[in-house]
Length: 264
Image (cartoon, rainbow, N blue to C red; front, side, top):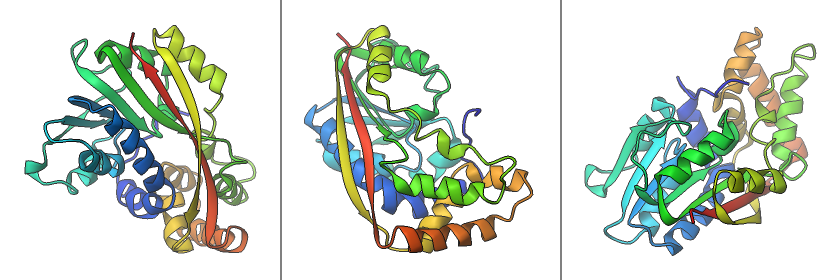
């Protein structure tokens, strides 16, 4: 799959439908880990609609500089609405494979559920190391497998049933990069040390199957895959909502891995 484009109405549906159901708990976890390092200058990659950004600002001490970046400007447009001009957060469009910043600029870099979408992960790791100060840390998370995140497999299979000859492949991407040895080797090859990988399991409450389903269908590039195949996104969304209610109920398990590495 090419680089995922989160454009049009996708950012709003992503923020409203997916944020409360799958992202916010992990955002709290990641922000706590970053705040423990007390960085003066922090870079967030693939910041999206600012779900982690908001928590980072709340967790960081006064005087910390926070720069939130994303490849997709429409995502940042939503993120900016969550902050006042006096909050001290900067937003910039940036490509994680080619960061427009000088060497040794940041104390910490963080990224929530973005690395899986980077088309050249080794290059992104080298870029992160380049702009980190000596002794700086890169902390990011990735999703676990479909088996550990049943909502993803359920969404994929439900949508695939509409297009048996050409099933959309979006959900194979964010849940296909969780091999600990592969990630550790890539980071070490990029020059990082002290690589640690923590498994983090959460249970999330499904407050609204309809809202969650809308996020799963309209809140990511799956929407474009459905329309490109001549499908009706509203029909697909209704079917996903029914499947969520029937098979997941009111809550669901989630699994992610948090990776930390140091620029020696």
